[in-house]
View 1 (cartoon, helix red, strand yellow):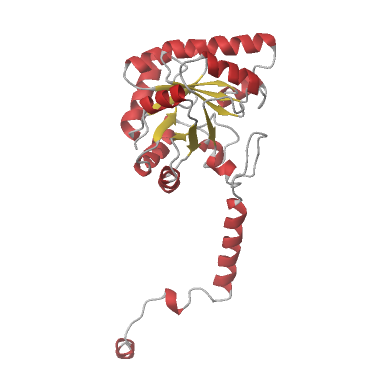
View 2: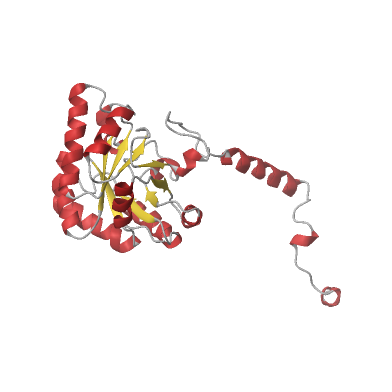
Length: 275
């Protein structure tokens, strides 16, 4: 069954957990979709995972459209959300609507996601007014990594917790249909989840959220550059892939691949007439 914005709302009301994973290409999106995961996030984390950047700052709108379109071609039932990258919405409300519109038109996604609280509420209002669903993102917002001074848990002090709650209520009021909470203390995330009528999707925010999201390469142990505390490896696909690559390399070098069963035949008479 096709997952929609209405599906998220209904799952929140029924107390059913929402599953979300990242994908950045057609083949992976197809597998995630066929597994029954509710939603796919084309995250600007593709900057780290797919493009080898140190952070998400260099990712462009064109990058997001390129990867987002591929994912949307592979996902038939999952709700596809595409991240709005750094400076695609912060400069002005007009920029935000234009870029959100481009992303939706050129990828065929169901929603866009942007980072920030009260400061981006005008953008959220304008984007949703243009009939583009928005997922908000609070807590550790990777596009603000330089302002934070690193990857740190957010909302631990009284003032920070109060601001996080205020921001969560503000983005809901602005029209976001869901909220991602990243690297937020579990009890605070649970409190926010209970306060809001829209679903919360946690990543490093505990089990009290209405759903969870992980970077697929992290949960499959394919991305080894950095492993956050909140990641659980559901399979060691990275090691399986490396072993397969080693075996392929060896088979090519000892000429055991390709074997006769991997080759195409031609009549000996044709070969004889070539001499």
